[in-house]
Image (cartoon, rainbow, N blue to C red; front, side, top):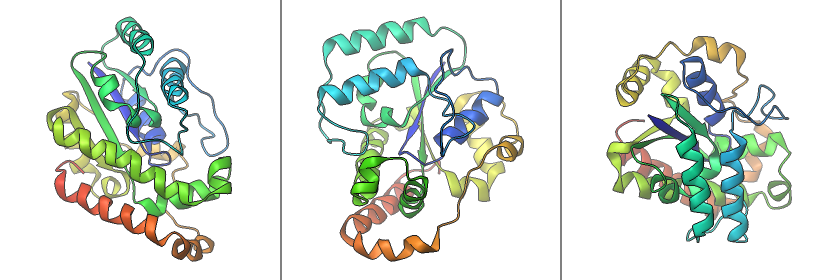
Length: 242
């Protein structure tokens, strides 16, 4: 079984990748190391990340300024197919937020692929990106935090509506409030027993608190923020897993 773990940046993808690694899933041999904001590591296989970056470059796009309609060069698809064919261990998983922009591309690159989508309230994502302060486009144009949230999660909802049986959408903060139910549903989806998440949380620095200094900025983002809040509610309403 191969799993694609993805979602908007700062939505708990690293935390869940760490958790599933603890549960026995194989994440790859060449993982991106720790940096500010992810001091325990990003848990991203660089070969998959490089393909996603190649796709963004082919579209003159950026992870925080993505386009809804993207071209997928044939030579890049061949690279993806070869890469996935080499990943033979049972329960292989790769994590990269950028994969959310190319879901059909990855779905068509290998059979029987499952997707875990991490969802997080747009205000919490915005706050986390502002506090991290390492992303130049966000520092220059803070509205891109909401804009990119909308594009990533629009793609996720569209793919889910067409392929519900292949997908699990997990709202990271709601999952913690009823972890036993989330654990039960995720275990059934993956068809493997899963441990409690507490040991992963103890070593992770995931923060669900909003910096009060960022509240004033929300008013400046009103149009973008309102679109995101509406989409967030739609996702919660139309998906059963989260």
